[in-house]
Length: 448
Ligand code: TRP
Image (cartoon, rainbow, N blue to C red; front, side, top):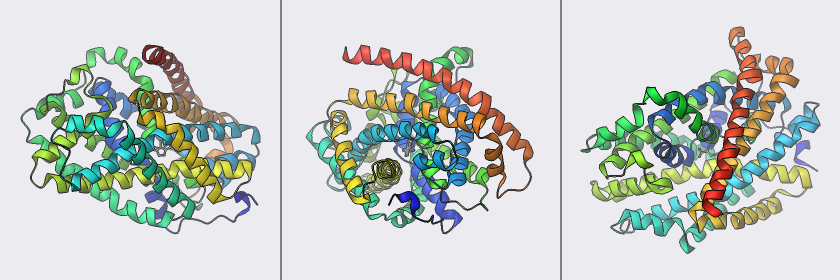
């Protein structure tokens, strides 16, 4: 029996759905990837383009996924069959592939977090946070902690203990916000904080137009990654939603929380990076930026190792609930496609994802290569295909679905469908083109 035949449960409460979606969205993407990408991509201009893309593309695409999920009551693979357009299920295949690649290195970074937890409670980050990061990020320790992280995610998926995760998210989100606010407050007192804020928040409008084009793939990739879009996570989660829920409201809440946490993480990272003498104008530290600067901060502050330990535990919970959502989609894909049981599917996929991730735990260039390909290309293509489907094939039904659980707001619906039809495909097509060109250059420059 495929999982499609199982009667659909629904989220017990509205909070359950929001918590799960926020649990998926808030993760390493907000706290690790957003600040380091911003540092690498020129600072405030990147932030501006990212925010524009979240509002103009991310929110509508999230609603696209919600509409597909709630209408079909299926995961991405079953969804298109149920909606009467089975040939579109290749969108689900792209999504599963994206999730597969993303999780393989996401788990490596999750493993770093686990190592930082251990270090926080066992005497700190070796006196030199930079060396500590290098030793953490690649090599045997990285591979072992990657295995541990994957094991944790697989355990959660195989046991189906989603409830525990929702409860964890309930604690995690407010705790992360409180910790980040406190750290941002501490950062504001640092000597060079202002330099950091300038870089992060004060865009150079004179070069905006040309900069915006060159950072479009990175900003779009980040918008999709941080909101968990383009691979069907939000389709899956909304497939358990009742018709009485207001999709627009829910998407606004999820996007707002996720964006708020990312912006806060930047307010922490940039004063610390500037005060630690990182040269922001030339790219600012790479994938280790946030880990190094936070560890340095924890070394110097009162009770810093305790604060650091709590912070990294919360980050691990955030990362686990995000990783869970990815594995869940990939496992459902395999269960539905090959008709295998949940536990063997989870074990098998986990093992393969672990192996595929190993190169990224040995050489950070592989991490970049995986990350760029999956986010800037696959997720964007996924979002493009889903939006074309809704905008051009399924629009009347989609509008009806969007309107369920809501009164009024026909103006928004008209805006939405036009954005989904025209703006999203044009912007994303152009983005994919730029991303592919950039990717080829990256591969040639790094590996060939
Ligand atoms: N959004 C998560 C983060 O920011 C990562 C994530 C979870 C994700 N599910 C996803 C990214 C699906 C892309 C697609 O950490």
